[in-house]
Image (cartoon, rainbow, N blue to C red; front, side, top):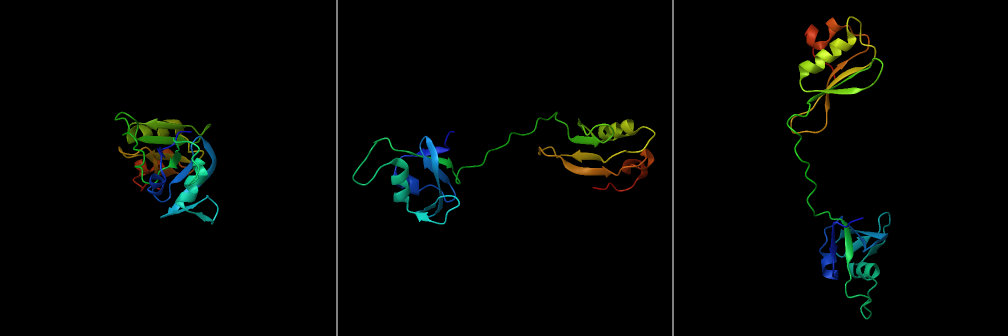
Length: 170
């Protein structure tokens, strides 16, 4: 595991943001969460520790005994760090997905709503929908698909929302 960052002094440890998680360098056996100024807890425990106590315990250093001049504490989760930024979705990625429950539950992606509708019509043919049939859509700036059309089992093609003029159900 790689830490989000490391701190090399008690003062740096105290400056870590509240809700951050820290551990001894190279040893994840003990983890502490900063719960407030000069206050740390082990996750799941209500007992609090001072910053000095956490520093001493995680680095093996005490006021009169220093075991290693290169002492450090790993900041595993830094609550003050900016969150990850997801890159934009590729321009040519599909905006629609369909699931047509006939023989399988495969989800197929489509670039346009018309392609998605045509795929459902082609799969159903002159019959009726067998299982739950869905169309999902996602905005150009989103990764996740959201439901946009639901077609109940037993629906014939002429009764599809885009054929009958009925409002799409979700």
